[in-house]
Image 1 (cartoon, rainbow, N blue to C red):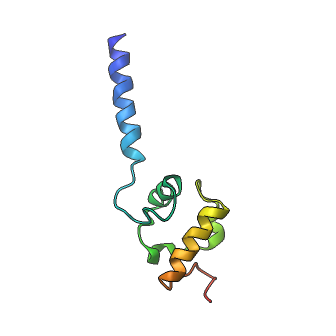
Image 2: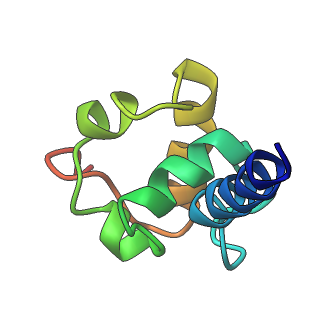
Image 3: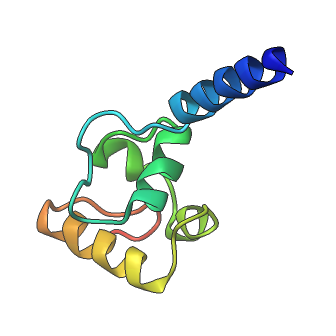
Amino acid sequence: MINLVIMAKCLNSICAVSHTVTGDFLQGIIPMPARRALGKEKINSLEKLSQYSEKEILQMHGFGKNTMEKLKIHMMENEIYFKNNQS
């Protein structure tokens, strides 16, 4: 029984570490679930984000209409656009 408790604590630590967002990329711009999804794909700059289409990003967990709108506004302020969406 004690071994199960120890193993459960170890698994919790592994899960928490594997889903932690490091850095402050887009912090305060988009919600944490969307930031985690970008982190899983190793997207940690606007330049890397611009290599994806809007449709590809919308398919990620945590991205909906509101989050996408906030992200697009932030990107436009920095004169960076999604792939195939240059204005």
